[in-house]
Amino acid sequence: MVDVRTAGEFSSGHLPNAINFPLDEIELSLPRRVKNKNQVLLLHCQGGSRSGAARKKLNGLGYNSAFNLGSYRRAAEIVGSNQDSCAR
Image 1 (cartoon, rainbow, N blue to C red):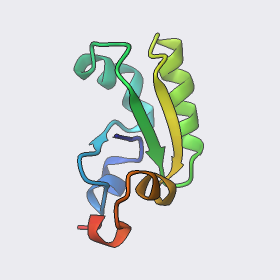
Image 2 (cartoon, helix red, strand yellow):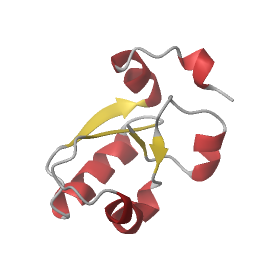
Image 3 (tube, rainbow, N blue to C red):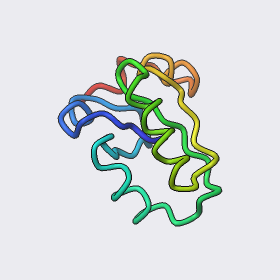
Image 4 (cartoon, rainbow, N blue to C red):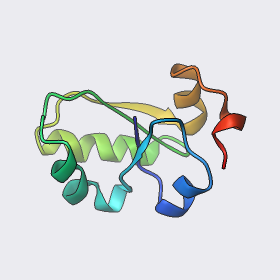
């Protein structure tokens, strides 16, 4: 689970086991940590547009298993997480 929101948004609450790679840093920071370009990457942000942009950037880098889950709320529903328990 990759959260592409800003570090501040991430620190105010995030999904369990999510890793934060802000959109403006994702092209440099994610490849350092995720070497396997076949790794499934489930992307989300607050509303869905930044995670869509992140998917396009990652596809351009060869990560063809990056999927845009859309909004934080939708990602929480998909992974079966209670949003209220994710806030810190």
